[in-house]
Image 1 (cartoon, rainbow, N blue to C red):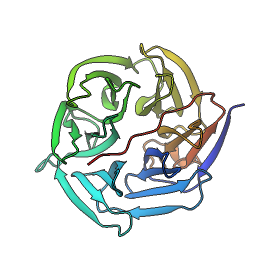
Image 2: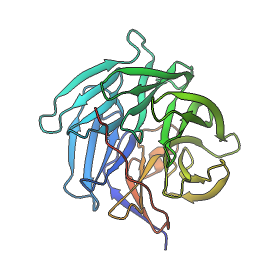
Image 3: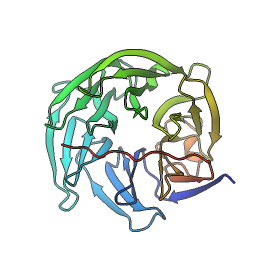
Length: 290
């Protein structure tokens, strides 16, 4: 039976980037404009939080401990024990309007993250890859709002949403080099109620996209055909990840920030939700190897 519970009652301004760590059995997520990172166990207990100096888009846990975070101006290293944040690389130095946003680690342990226009209007965003040696490489540009990077089970397809263009792309991804070889439209949201935001791939190879401004999760088959739609109690949903001991709980973030006139009426906007009973499992997320 499908059951939706509140996992975290704290109302994040812009909850994003949920990441389940199978090793620790903990959920991590961010409040982009807190700006903060939060973490809790599968019951929402043993909560920890870290303050950050700039707005955050996403994080990648490192194999050697700590995290790499995509902050407004680029990639930074976070020491969980001390809270110290050190710049690894600025991604678009000298540019005022872009900020870094969503990201995900590929199957080989590289961190893929993109930037977006602060006002979500102009195509000033780019897609970057952070390699194990902490070098930064540009994969694409002309993006309005980077969101939802995730990988097929074999790692050879990178799914990536440009929320501003209402589309999810699929790139052919070279697993040896981390380069993108081609790009096609995987799914268009022109006919949907909302826009594509955070995403993940389940153990059957289907893509789950969190539809922002509509409060729905949309599951696409590998050909980009809608397979299933799951509604949530708020419109302000932003991203999701599968977690829990069996990777069968969908954790969904949301935002309390009033992007339209309805959000102040949603008591649960900004909470993190846990969806049980979907009958679907996720796959473990890799850690960053740098």
